Image (tube, rainbow, N blue to C red; front, side):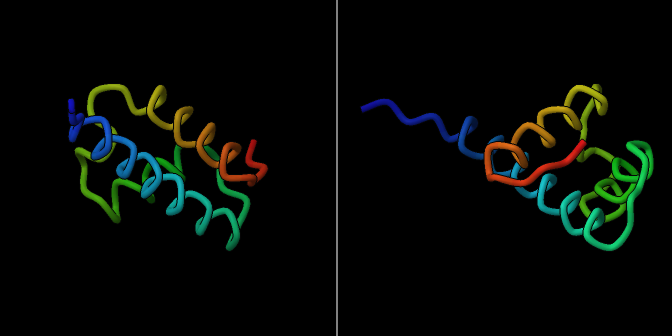
Length: 71
């Protein structure tokens, strides 16, 4: 049986970031840059790696998968 711990860890990280974004959006309608900054504030500067915009879009997609509407 093949295990993919990296994939599971990456998924957990995406969901964690997405939930931080959701929490922030429940408090205020923030622009993308502020949401990215909030995630970095909570998880550290490396939370989004080298491509924060791409990672942010994945986070928003996960919110949609979880049934939340975020634009």
